[in-house]
Length: 174
Image (cartoon, rainbow, N blue to C red):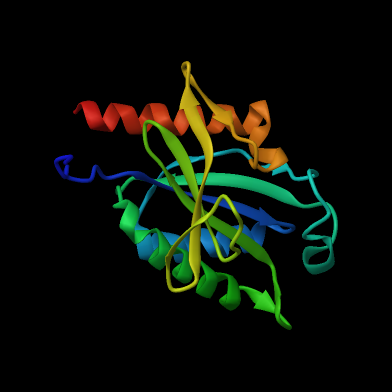
């Protein structure tokens, strides 16, 4: 029988999809109030990997990522996804979101994203929320898995998560 180990805190991250920066800023203010200061914010990237969001958001979408200074425990992910869904609802117009917030976490071995959608590679957490390992850290970098979204496979995104991981690793050493 294996011995139960204490769970290590992990790095909370959020991905954002939006058309207008004003809504990104509103989302970040709300997240700051809930989870505290950011310790990393990516530059704004073009989001042209899929038309999935076009009906709701239109075209010309942008993407950015942020991580938070305060660590979380993995067991908090479903609660955090429910909070981000409420923030999305508050920042909406006529039942259409103006920002999409994708929370997740990374540790030294993986990037995990939360979802409201079940699928064969997702594990149920709680309250209608699922989790998936989206990237695995192997050979000195994050690597995609068979189900990883096309944008998360990009060198640009992987570089972002490697940077966040390095900051997280530094905090573990202190």
